[in-house]
Length: 302
Image (cartoon, rainbow, N blue to C red):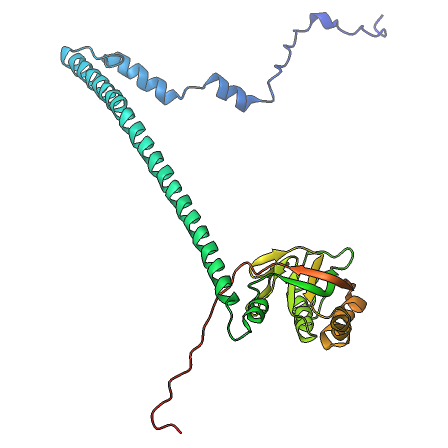
């Protein structure tokens, strides 16, 4: 019947389609891998093979030249190894000699340091002995005031400490610009305290066991307080020899005592002042004896 529909053609009769390569999307990389050697190099290699110039030299002259070059290279390597072997003992000897020179120099420096310390001790002892010699009945007083001898007697003990939670970070506390505060005692605060004790009648003063003299320096190095170039660690114990009743009262009533009170009220600096029946202060660690002579009167001066 012409009106009947024809069945669809069978799929098995069509030609099979080859499957796609997994690396079809990477054609550039595939080309590089398949042609890793440049075609120009391949052509040059083929041309040398055709001309007979590839590989090792074929003529006797070329072979002799190659052999001579290899022998020369071997000689250079052998000579270098021999020289290195000969120089090794020389370098070791020079190294030992240098070590010996350094050790002898260290021993000599240590000996000089011991001599300096011995001479310094001897000079200090002679200075103290010279200050203790009688000079019109005032030798003992001069030795005491100069710090050449140990001081002992009644006095006061002043303990000063930083504020609680004081930090050393940032700029220095109570600087001239802004008068900022971190609750730490500064070198100028200690200077005022010591000067106040001297002015109130103290005969001898020490800070953390360091005896002060007329030439002692109190200054700062960063956040540390130095007394005669020696750092102090809080709390600061200030001992003063003198009348324990009058000295403490006079210091509290002085301007420097009021200054310490302001530091306590405004910046949290802590301090305690108490009388002591007996205070013992060591002699100063270093003294400089200085003498003065009368200047000659100029001629024609009245």
